[in-house]
Length: 155
Image (cartoon, rainbow, N blue to C red; front, side, top):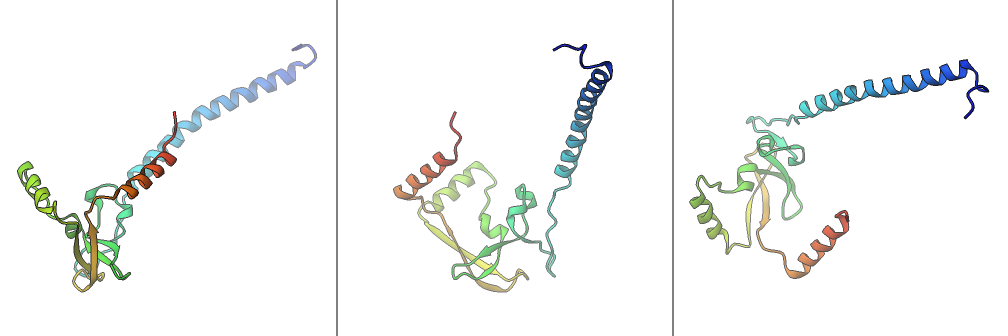
């Protein structure tokens, strides 16, 4: 490139433009990082409460088990929309490794269990919700493997 033909004004303008772009992009990155950090810190979902003080809604918004509502939105066996108690859904929680093994052994033979489906008040039973504990059959395992392979990036 021959700088004699461009002129000093064009060269200075080009340098100023490049410098402005560099400084602007460097200054913009911390702003984006700050916005991202602030949104991550304040994104706790606030669930509504019923008259008994129980929180209710979709478990979809919970980022941890501590954020799960007391009543989790669910669809009953007959298609009725309602809520299941988080404690019922999670079942008996062990306090020791021995208790965990005992609970596993007790539930081994059970292929499913039913829990009550409640209205938003958390008291009125409006149906039942089935929790399936059975292992998938070979066809289902093969279908799951195909889906995983389909959405797993190749190296």
